[in-house]
Image (cartoon, rainbow, N blue to C red; front, side, top):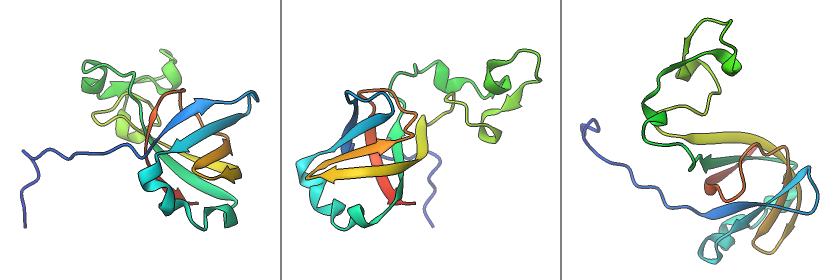
Amino acid sequence: MENWESKEIKLRPIGIIDKTSREDVMKITVYPEYAEGLDGIEELDYIYVLYWMNRLSENDRKILKVHPRGDVNKPLRGVFSLRSPMRPNPIGLTRVKLVKREGNILYVKGLDALPKSPVIDIKSG
């Protein structure tokens, strides 16, 4: 069994998130080399999108306790017990409604990622 404590894990983005003209719909452009992996996705109503919260600084990633929803009246809690973006590996996860697929582009509702966030994986939901 390998010791993973000192190893790095490398992720490759499979796509990018962007806005659309509709405020409630986001666009996920899957890079052409991964587009084949979308086959059959249009049969799904919901998918999980995993993305990298790329706007967090290295210092943000060191914060392990925060006030829930930023409310200082609530006691500090560990980031692993919350949906806080502050975490050692800033991986976001959202279950979204798949609106439609156009080739390598997915249109989704309910994605809480910021535009230009790299997509690291998509799973059936």
